[in-house]
Amino acid sequence: MANPPGQAGPKLISCRICGVIMVKFSKDVCQKCFQQEEEIFQRAKDFLKANPGVSIAEVAKAVQTTAAQIDFFIASGRFERVGLQIAHTCQTCNKTIKTGLICPECSKDLKEKVTRLQQDLKKAKG
Ligand SMILES: [Zn+2]
Ligand SMILES: [Zn+2]
Image (cartoon, rainbow, N blue to C red; front, side, top):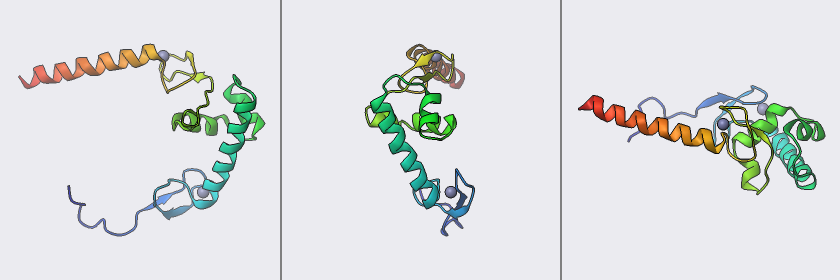
């Protein structure tokens, strides 16, 4: 598919963290925040390695960041990518899980719902 007309120029976005207006490259944060976030991630990673089984709140406190920031690392799969697990809650049922965004049960539920939806759509099309 071709690019829509009139979109050739650089795309301006605001940094996800500090809100500064910048040109979007591959990241959604500015260079300054990117470096800060990397530092926080490295520290959180080290802390998790040294203290397996800690909670989000404990990690956030240890590296002096917010729980939301740690949540973001979890949601973007960064801890999983480096082989670390952190207890967090399933986004659907609030059960404590260690990997992914939702627990296996909810994940199964979701898949079934999607399958049913697809079947319904097929039926609706006739
Ligand atoms: Zn920023
Ligand atoms: Zn769940």
